[in-house]
Length: 415
Image (cartoon, rainbow, N blue to C red; front, top):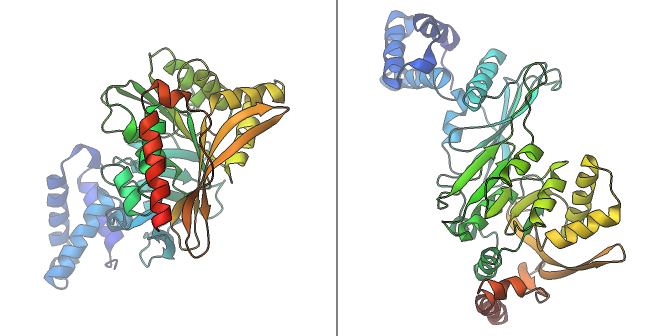
């Protein structure tokens, strides 16, 4: 419920504070709100609970995230979508619905956008109307302004769980069977290069973040992202790198490709590229093929095989080289493919895990290790054995992997 006169009251408060909301404490903001309410007609308005609601709304509109505040604090909501001032949608427990609340005017949406991008040194305006940013808790924000957006300012917030995504939380969400954790753990610890694929909102970033749990806490890890969102709390020697948009003169842009090249001079044990989207794919593959194994990255694709085709296309975006050479580089750089998807129920699942066994005659030899079977059982089934076990043996994980596979198959037989 939005109480009457909210906009006028807020303008009075901002005037009293000379617009310096970023430089005063929460306590001082509340003090100015209380003074303004007493001076206004709201001083004798309604019940105590209504006055407290007005006070809360004022604070959230000045210091917080306005009408979005309570939804950002709701752990059952994973995504918030703002379309102009009048339409707000949320994704709750896998289902999208429209909420009753809305912004008072479009200016409030623009003020919120400024508040979001300012701490991350991002710039968004009519000349640069599309930007990625993040909230202080790591939640990902995508902003599109007119004239690109015909519906007014559009904000999409992908929320992150407190404490980051973990294997334990993914198991609680039933995204894959518990017995698979031993298999994934052995692959990550043995430095297999893993590429996670899936559609938008299929859980790629969540799985990537969770798999990073298996990285040794003393390994030197460099993460490279368009907008930093990975939360590798357990890694002590962690360096997080983030791209930067060009300034108003079109200069000083720092791309993913720039950051990958820079990371190679930082003595990394592992390089994690949050999401491969373009020409940086070539730099990433070159890094993986020259001794920096153990990477985990993600890509938008419809299947494991489609992920490889999209990777080829991205490399070609950055340079002109024979397709066969690109395919050979991909086959020698990527070890494991994990494909994610969403069921009709809204639940995210691992649908497929594949290994690149070989490459010859312009074809990838892909072995499917695990496949999600729909129907009555609706479960992940083992369909093939890992061919390349050299890394498992080299890092002392071969017996652990074999035991994990045995337990996985044993559980399936008992089920």
